[in-house]
Length: 250
Image 1 (cartoon, helix red, strand yellow):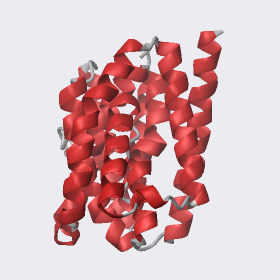
Image 2 (cartoon, rainbow, N blue to C red; image 1 turned 120 degrees about the vertical axis):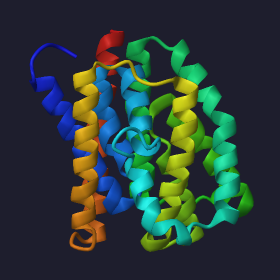
Image 3 (cartoon, rainbow, N blue to C red; image 1 turned 120 degrees about the horizontal axis):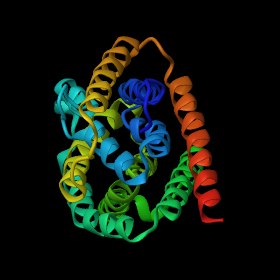
Image 4 (cartoon, rainbow, N blue to C red; image 1 turned 180 degrees about the vertical axis):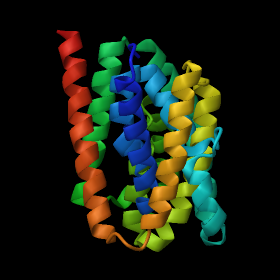
């Protein structure tokens, strides 16, 4: 990051917004925050910071862990077990792929993954392969790979929940449980981001503030509006990252 407070303020805004929408939707942090984080910090550092913030209970506590305190009794362990196991297996592959790509190519891939994931979720795609036990393994495997490579592992689980007919109330605690597991494993695989102490302080403070804001807004913001906002923000960020990546390749 460059000198001055502008980049830190931008980072704080991205993390705060991501933390807030995570509380409202169960899995919005990565979709909203990853494009902005990778543009500010670069793909490698942006992805691992997103992994930390989304599930590793880093410093002030990650937003997923906050949600689990209230929703742990609603977690469906028979479904979460194959989802999480498959994700754990594929995380190293995502880490390896991310390390092989040059930064512009990785940035373009990140943007393409976010944009494509948003498009699939917006369409509400029904996929027979994402049903039952086999569907849980497929969704978990894809989510683990995408999470460690691009910081965006939620869309496959969202599509699984859609095909399983889960309500938002059922989805949120299970998505948060999955987020804690897969992000902890991703951080272990990718390592911690190499950030200065002031940047860490800004990120942790913004994350805690976003979680508190999201908790305060829960029940006050209609679910369909929160979902639409998350998807539009994610789409804009994904397209921006995609454009910057392609510009670096030319």
